[in-house]
Length: 297
Length: 306
Image 1 (cartoon, each protein chain N blue to C red):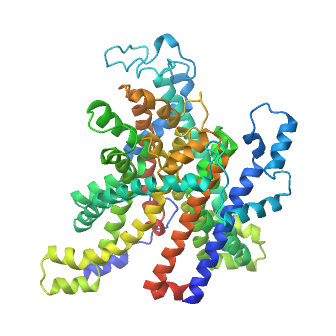
Image 2 (image 1 turned 90 degrees about the vertical axis):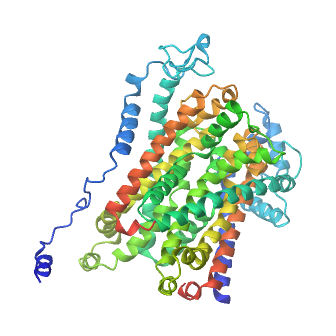
Image 3 (image 1 turned 135 degrees about the horizontal axis):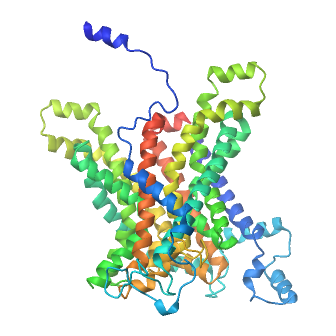
């Protein structure tokens, strides 16, 4: 009996958006890694010991400092043009961060907008948008991105655009589903009765309610987008040289790999892995915490 | 049922139409294909001649009509670089890609299914957590980097395996592993969740009530049914593998269609790029259609629900 009364006596807690963000199992290490990469990306100019794009040919293929032949001047060695690998990795963090975040935000805006329009307006708008989404989903995303990049030519902002228009489908799908249930809720009906225009309802009443979901999806998509950028750069249709992108460094280092110059391709790969792994773990954690509906995803 | 299939086929045709329109117009809108065809610095007269020769001076819709009509005849155009029909090139490379994908698929199932079963039987314990780590790593490591590290270890340092090319089964091991790695993670995840679902079902409970040993319940009753969605996914993944193998094929110089696409990009051989992407998209659209129909045949809820 006493147990039952205790259960009933529990005070109702006001649910706030971040109420469920208990910090107990917060993935601290991934957050620190991602924060560290962001810090390095922002202060790249101050942190990098050398110019990432200009090397001295006299100092080509120096190994990292702990190997024989390495010098403390180039902590992580130099590449085929004598450029400092550490400085290139530091500036590469900037490229990955900028491309990753802007592409995720851009695709998020495209996908969420289409999802809201599709879910709220319904009818033929819904049909058109969903058929488009289905088609896009049926395309091999990476191949399509490579195709687009090959036509429009390499540049960092082209990559952002291409990744944006390639990876929006997931947002559109999930957002539409949420909007479909949201628009039956009372506050939306009240807004209709109060005479709000459709646009106002979508912007003021629907959008704030799906932001959580969009943020979770965005975090999960960050890893996908960063790998896609690295892949495009690796294939030579991404960020153009001499810009220090990690994917580009990997592909430059491929020749030297055969003669054992491991640092040129292993190190950028480790950077990509750390960043993507951290983003995925954080995204997973956010998903479980912020959005119970996405737990099955 | 007929209505459902009709609807699905309709969507599939629509997808194919949108695919062709997208590819066709992206090429024309984002740049003049004629500039891709001539040497840089060609005269205006040369450009005009090229434009006329390839029909690029006609209205866009006429061009699209011609494009579709030749597609219907199985004509994907002529490669600029190889001077042979694109379809011929594509088909000559396809067996290599399928071979690689099949071996990679075998490896990924060999790794993914047992680890998935183990994880589902030991939820929340060591094997489950190890499986989770493995899945995360699988999703976070770019396959080309896995490939390069494999080359470094097994070709450069140990000298056990050839670093690139094709020919012997030895050539296949590393590319198949680099390609299968990511999919092994996906298969593991699905096996785990599918096993968990089946293990919670009534007939498994009954089997346990009958007093069957745990190993028999899992191996005979649960596993077989849990395998259905995994094998379906594997079917779709095989097609996806053929189309995402591009980076792995480039790293290992494997002569498949991914490598063909890469060559097309490097040589600015536009018809090849267009053809490979078009074929890849069409393959995926059709596989999705087949899976949709198969599901509807198996499960009446799907065809009646939508």
